[in-house]
View (cartoon, rainbow, N blue to C red):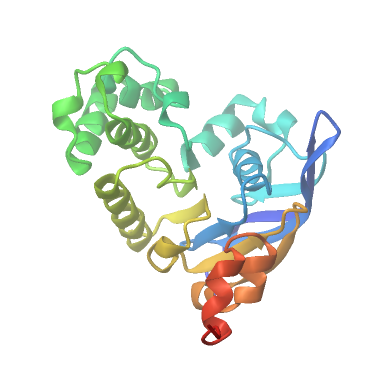
Length: 261
């Protein structure tokens, strides 16, 4: 039996300032335990979609259901609904500077649990657990400005994992990281998937897809969902990847055979 659907989007439309279209009639379902990659060129709407899934933005039209309930601005104003939703879904931004703002790493990671009403003792225990899990205990008393880019990314991830959400949203997770940090993060996403987390991530890094995703949703530069399939199916469709500007023409040359000199 297929796992239950936990995120359901129907005909989502969103435009910034009512003029600049970001999503144009997007519909899809994410099932429990899936790892889903959102693929598309920069500006196609991937980041906007993640913000909608996290309840940071709301569609101009269409509907979004998470965990069996409609996610709307009115519903998120209800404290009980909001706390339940926020505890079950976590968003790791592309730029960790937008997420890490507390005076110290320990306070940063404790912020979410304390906001959800945990006691200081409970929150401290959770913080110690996630510091150990991500191997960043030595960073606990540092200020964010003392961290490297890779360390900030780990702290941003820790501040979400400490809540133990069911769904994790990643926006361009490997962007601007050094190779070692990229590898660490790709392996972490795979481990979280094996642990049963539902993961939705936006990326145009095709090299990591086979590790971080089971299924791909492909967006055009016209802000529409134009294809979905397994990683193998999508990567095999070179015409599709060329059409949505995920590969360039030169990468097609191997299909044409040797060029006459």
